[in-house]
Amino acid sequence: MTRNLKPGFTTGTAAAAAVKGALCLLVRGGIPDCLRIPFLSEGFADIHPHTCQRLAPDMALCTVIKDGGDDPDVTDKAEIGAVVTLDSGLTDIRIRGGRGVGRVTRPGLGLPLDGPAINPGPVTMIRNAVSDVMGPDARGLDIEIFVKDGEKIAEKTLNARLGIVGGISILGTTGVVKPLSHEAYIATIGSAVSVAAASGLTQVVFTTGRRSERFAMKTFPDLPAEAFVQIGDFFKASLEKAVETGLRSVTLAVFFGKAVKMAKGAPHTHAAKSDVSLAALAGWVMDISGDQDLAFMVRSANTARHAFELAYPVCPGMVAVVGREMIRWAETFSTGQLAVQALIFDFEGHVIFDSSADRSGI
Image (cartoon, rainbow, N blue to C red; front, side, top):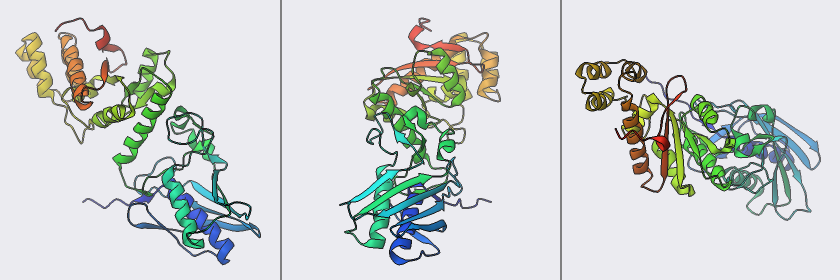
């Protein structure tokens, strides 16, 4: 029986709720049981305040607990807060990052250097929260967003590689977290590619996860960390992001199993999205070796790893075919605007194909 997955809300929504709670305490003398925050798309979140206190006649603090719903990440259950100060000397609303909110140190994220890692979506939601309490002409406010233990939480993310130091990012394009959302992952890929491009890198290496990235880093020890981008299962979408960002070349560094899926032209390489077509692999083995028995065993294999263990010792040329087909599809998905290098690892992390050194002619 399939159950409906519960949506959650972003760190940006949490920050907006904290601001609204602090403002209600300052302006209205109390806070409601639920702080209603409209999303930037449709719908809203009713968020319970966690703590709220007046620090001075013109200053209040409020925190909320971030809820990732059924798609929690490392920020799920983080305590996100705001200190709001009424300041008649300000002609606008000043939003800044406090402890636990990252600081931007590299270009490519669309945020000012040395400023807080608070994206435009959350800024809009914070301003909307202010308007809801004080009206559309509100001004003279100093707002400091903070995250309890944000520095520790950030250690579990790739923020440092993106040039965000000292804490987490306050994120969200709509405000709502949809369970198993692909949009968020693709947005992360886009950010990583943008940072790599803004850093002036001429070689960017796409891997599908931490293990393939670890082997890729050993293969390219002179490249900085920001040159490596984990694309997960998003083969096509990552290449499209690379083109959008203006990159001219990428290296795909993947294990054989993922390479086979890419060689089939699967835009998304997760098992649930793309069966490993052992029939195609068997066909390539047959074309190269002419060995019907071997091709039958490959077709009947349990997994790509099983097929590899059966065929590679006697038909190593199949890997070159997989590599070339992977490049062909990558060039197709990037509409011919990227030069693509393919690097394939065996299941122990040894390089078994490098298109830059491919002279086999098979």
